[in-house]
Structure formats: C-alpha cells, structure tokens
Length: 327
Image 1 (cartoon, rainbow, N blue to C red):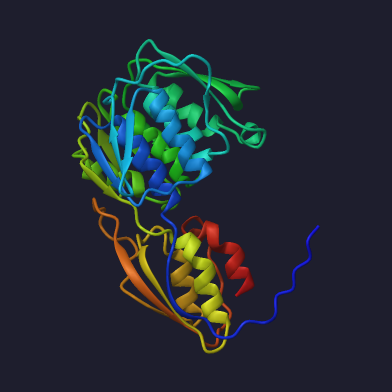
Image 2 (cartoon, rainbow, N blue to C red):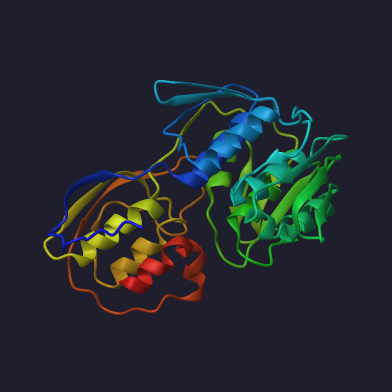
C-alpha cells in the first residue's frame, strides 16, 4: 500500500474541458450502426463501457474507422444486424445492455445472446423485457430477469406503454424498437428522463413528437444521420463545479459542456442554494429539439443555503446527488 499526503489546496482558477459525455457516446455508436449512411462522430468518449459499445456494433456488421480524433461509423441499416458466433459481451456497460436489445428485437428470424461481467449479471433486464415482448419480440433471461439473456427478433408492432419508473435506458430501448415497428408507439413516463435518444432520432429524420399524452413515434421510417457532436459531460464536470463552489476564492470556467435541460437538474439545485453558475442553460421543459445544446459555464465560490430536492428532480440529477449531499 502507498500512503500519500495531500495538503489543503488554494483557490481553483482556470478553465477545464470535461470528458466527452458517456450517455451520448453510447447512443452515437448505436445510431451510427443503425443509420443508412455513414455517420461522423466527433469527441467520442473512449472508455471501457463506450468501447464495449463500439466492439458490439462491429460484431453486428458496422465498420468503425477513426482518424484525427473523429470516428466514422458505416452502419448496416435498421434491419441489417448480422448474427454472431457466441455472446455479445457488454462488459460492464448497463446502457449497452439495455439499449441494444431494442434494435435487435426488430431483426426478424435472428437471435443474439448478451452477457457481461459479474456486476452486469446482477443488474435486471425485466424492465426492457416487458415492453419488447408486448411489441412481439422474445427475450429469455436467466431467472427471468438477469444476463446472460437471449433476444430473438420478430416483426414488431407499435404499443402504448406507460413506464413504471422514469428511465432513459428503458425508454430508449423501446424507442429503438419503435422505429422498426408497424404503427405508432406511444410512451408515457411518470417523470421526465434524459432525452438524448429522442434528439438523435429527430436529427436522423425520424418523426418524434412529445405532447401531454407522452412520446409518439411512427415506425417504418429510415434513419439517416450524418454527424453527431458529443458534448462535454456535465456529470463529470460536476466535481470541478462543486469544488469551485466550496473553495474560497475560486473561479473555474467549464468549456463546451452539454446543458440539455434533462441533464442540468444539479445546476438548478445549485442555483437554488445560492451558488454562482453563469451560462445559458436550456430552459426546463423546452420543446424537443434535434441538437444537444453546448455552453460555457463560469463557476465562482460563494455562500450556500440549504434546500430540498423534490422527488421529481431526482431523475434529472441522479448522478450528482452525492455531490448535493456534500454541498
């Protein structure tokens, strides 16, 4: 064991650029594989989880090329995923495990097994299994709810489905199945969740609308993306933002960070506590758009007051709740 001593630091001053957004990177790789034309992805996050997604789409037939810090993904189209020898390894990527079956469910007459590490085998998949079965797919899981599990594609049909829990992963899985299904799929959530999948669908020419009744997608539309820019990850930047708020004399600028309103619940909580975070955030409840908003944020130290985090705010600040407790 190595012992290290860290003396108290002075004020934090300067600019940082957060690592690329993990959630959007996962989706960029999947949508690149599904798209009918090559997709250029800039600022893709290379990490164990997101590289597992790249490896998975390559096993399914997509070609991934990288040069000058950009990826070009040449996909196989909406129904062109090829069968694999042996299981697809999702490693420790829960997002991959829950989103990929939505696409595979529409591959009529083909089947795949998904598996991962010891941790992923403890994470349930029954919340994606239920809507996919209602749409016509077959998902057979260990003990009814765990990996490894087998997904068998079939002709799918649209459904009206109320998610029992607000979950961007479950919602995204159903949306990926919906674009290949016959008819319209309508999804309702008990509370808003991250909307990155809806934005990519819109950017790819898929008609997605959101109204008081929920999200609506009509199947059978081709997906045609060309470029995806992955913003900096606000959840990663939250650690530096918290430090700047807490350490006297600090002023930190966070550049090129995503400020999608479904990801900035932490910043809204901070503002309520009296923290100084300057920058143009997307308005909460903004109309669904096809572009991820990106901004520069300036954070300075200041006194804080206590607040209450309401139940409806939790899905939009889920990753940062430990930092809220610290603050």
